[in-house]
Length: 87
Image (tube, rainbow, N blue to C red; front, side, top):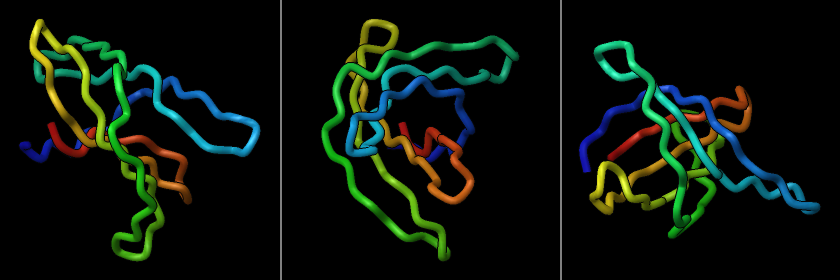
């Protein structure tokens, strides 16, 4: 997987216990067009602490442009921001 570290707009769902699950996100490409990706499957979810920031790390996979791809999404707890970290 290649590190891209891009901020994304996310649609997520939260259950009664407060657990967050990503559903769909979109990001800006280099040509300033938007790409929208539906999260087909969350493979793993773990809580990490990087540089003092707590974040949820989600390993996911989706069908993107006809190809099944794995990628990593990160949710920073303190800032409430989502990132596409690796793809």
